[in-house]
Structures are given as structure tokens and as C-alpha cells.
Image (cartoon, rainbow over all chains, first blue to last red; front, top):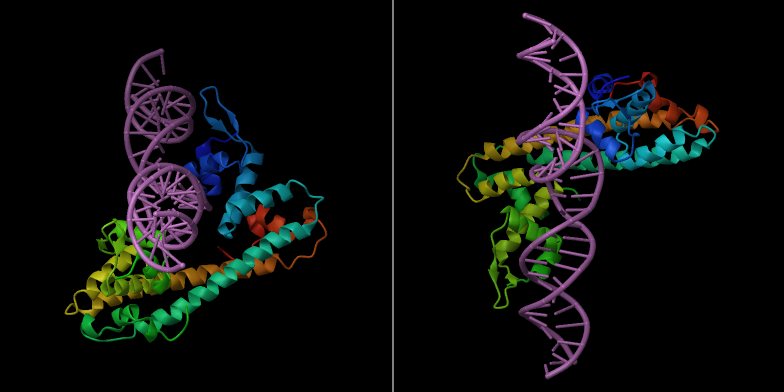
Length: 136
Length: 136
DNA sequence: TATAATTCCTCTAGCCACTAGAGCTTCAAG
DNA sequence: CTTGAAGCTCTAGTGGCTAGAGGAATTATA
């Protein structure tokens, strides 16, 4: 049996976050000690590790809910898990694309070496969209 | 003079967002009509365009506050604007790097073509961090 | 066994940058 | 002068936590 602090140390998930996941229904309410403190089993530990790992990969709590549900039903088709992951991959890719456009624009405007704000490319660009090179 | 709706159409900033910016102190409280409706000048329009454009480039509201302040003081050194923009560029770049690591991992795990969840790489990987190729 | 230090409890509120909706008032066109 | 669109304020919700208050339980040391 683990206390919430031990669980936190083993998974790297902060204590308030564990309680938050419980509230959100991602993890079951664990048993309690006589004094009402949470006591977790190994099952609780691996479920939380699963969640932690999914969050690291950027899945939303809603996606994780689906993935956890699937993981409890090994006979279900793999394609369900795939579509969640593939949709997330697409999302990640479009975020990358957007950030790369930003990066390009930011690089361009920070190249300016004017002395003061009056002629500074950063400020000028922000004030006038027409000075941008690309759409964003 | 523009109504809030006209300002919204011209800048592409939604009406509630304009009011939110006013509340946050990014834009001055505009004059009002006799019936208490907001009436904006061209100055208000260009200030809001500046904000819109900065948000498009991903600057935080706090950064924008600084940039707006600089734009009002053309004699100030350009370096202040640069450091805000450069810091933001770094932030964007580190987000890109992180997302690219995610992308790699997600691509890898979605390649699996198992039939059901029991042997699916997506679920397996999430359950066991040891199966990941890279740190993330 | 007594006490001190640490961990844990619940509850509320805050973060960012909006967005949605209720219930009401004002404006502009015909 | 009527009507419908657009405006007003205010409150609450979004996601995924995080922080703090004020108290109770547990654990380690003396």
C-alpha cells in the first residue's frame, strides 16, 4: 500500500494532480486509512503511470479516458486506440506547422538593428500587418 | 467613430475579446454614445490591430502590454522590444522541439497493426514507459 | 510514551486568454 | 413608430492543473 506521497514520488505526478485526476474520474477512489488518508495498490500505481505517460505524450484528459477504457478491454479492436493516437498526431503536426510559421516571422523581425523604437522592425511589423512576409 | 461591432469586423477580434482587452487594460476605455455604447476612434482601431497582430504571433498579453508601451515611446531603445521578441522566439523554438519529439514517438507507436488492444503498441507503450524510444 | 516534524485532509480560489449565455437596453432602417 | 439587429453588464465555464488556508493524521525521534 502506498500513501499519496509515495505514489507521487514513484510516478512523478504531483499530489494535487493525483487528487485532481481522482475528481475527474480518471482514477478510482482508493481505499482509506483509519484516519481517512488515501492508500493505493499496485494497480493504482500502474494506472497512474499510464496516465502520466499519456499526458507526457500530450493526450488530453478526454483522450486518456478513452485510452484507459480500451486498456481495460483487451479484446477490443486496436483501431480505436489508433484513431485516438492518429488524431492526436495530426493535431501535434498542425501545431508544429503553425509554430514554424511563427518562428520564421519572429526570426525575420528580430534581425532588425535600429537604434530606437521609432524605426524598430519589431514594433513596426506589429503595428502594420502589411509588413509581414507570410500569412499567419 | 466605430461601434464595437465595426471594430470587431475590421480587426478580426471578437466583440467579447475586445471588452476583455479593455478590462485587462490593454486598450483604453473608449468614449460612449448617449446610450452608453462604446465608440472607437482610428487610434483605437490601430491599437487593437497591433494587439491582434501580436497575438497572432503568439505574444502573451503581458508581453503585448510591454510592446504597446514601447510603441508609445519612439525614443526608447529598440533593444527592449528585441529582448521581448527574442525571448518569445526562444519559447516558440523550445515548443517546436518538444512537439517534434512527441511527433516522433506518436508516429512510431501508431505504426502498429495488431488486431486488438491486448497486443496493441499504442496501449502497450502507454502502459510501460520502458517501451519508449526517446526521452520526453 | 510524549512530542515534534512531516505528511495528509478538504475546500476555495487562481492561472491564461478567452467564450457563452441570460436578461436587458439602445440603435438604425423602413 | 415599430421592429430587429446590435449593444450593454454580469456571471460562469473552458483545460489542466497549482497554491494556500486551516486543520487532522501519521511517523520519527527522545
